[in-house]
Length: 277
Image (cartoon, rainbow, N blue to C red; front, side, top):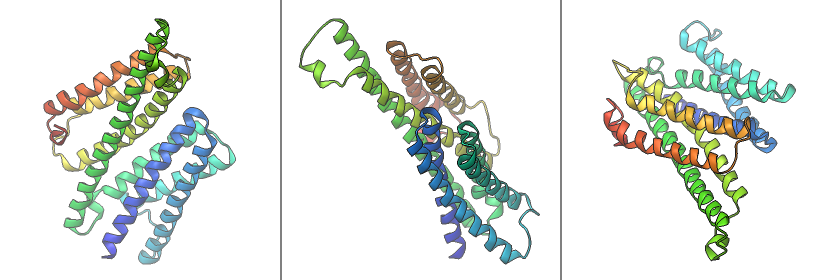
């Protein structure tokens, strides 16, 4: 019972950590201080829980937790979170904070879901299954965000066409203005990219644990990385190159077509992503 409770708390930390990174990503893109503050306090909760577990482990074992690879991973993740909180409060270097947390999330996911550290085989199998569940859930949420962005890009293109042709009708007024449509599409893609990145991290962790012959060139994996690069390029063009309007909307529509290909075709060609089919 105690082992199961600890497992659930560690999984809760992973979820809170993922949400924190999502808000840090929003702040990283838009310099949103409210998102930064929310992310900071979520991460602070994770740090408090980690610190409590660290001290309990030291009391239980009577030594500092660095003698095994999994003890070292946990302490390393704790150090990264501590540094991230300090940097966020004192230096406010958003770029460093975000990528430090991504690295910390990877290390913490490896530690939490590695079945080697769990004494009970049944509990180890359950943790690996739950790792898969979290991975799939995040992937589907990212696809949902991309789908919403796609819809708003289509509405943007429709509104743009109506304005260009000067068709002043009821349909024009029922669609929101162009700037709002583009903004919502951009925000949806920002959330989608963060969720897809976290999903890939957890998915690769699951594949490494569960699959005897893990293929990096599996069509589903390759397709997912292409999507991540494509939507990251969208964000780069929007933020750094100041690309707006019709061209960005067309790029978003094209990216969503790649999602459909990846979701249906690549899943069928994949050697292990059969649950998406």
